[in-house]
View 1: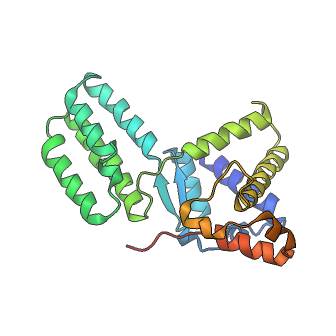
View 2: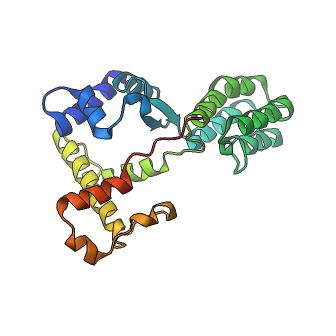
Length: 242
């Protein structure tokens, strides 16, 4: 499985962006940064994790907190009753709106973690405590350390659904799949450009409102000026170092 993921990643990058087999170099050009600056989200699939670690050496892996919460509940139900109040309190303390996943700095994270370990972990079964300490907590800590607290792959799941609709839920040859991926990406770029003019279903967040352009001004711009405006608004934003 890992081999299939790696092969798929490399073929996608080579086919769309390269054509010369220089996957690693072109992948850097694709995101315009070093792999160590990348944040790659995943849903806990071990084969995908190994493939990303191999294909993008040095990138930080970010875990989907929704999947982590589901996994924790699933493991809890294996060792205790589904309505156990201790389990409910633990899940809320970890994955609630003001829980561990909401802690975006080291101080608040370890303060909350200490409280959980002192008051909420002791009443739960030993196997669940081991699962939390050995699996859940390290991934949440890693999310916090790379400034991706509370991240979920919901947007990825939505795009996956769009891709399946494009394919009509049928198996496709890889070149056709790649062409569909390219078309979807191009459509996203077009919608992002339209958002700059207030003509898209997408809207600029308040912090980016200064990049808004009028249609009349856009029409007077040269292609170089338009690219400059787009790049200035949508350039990759790296998390600040802690």
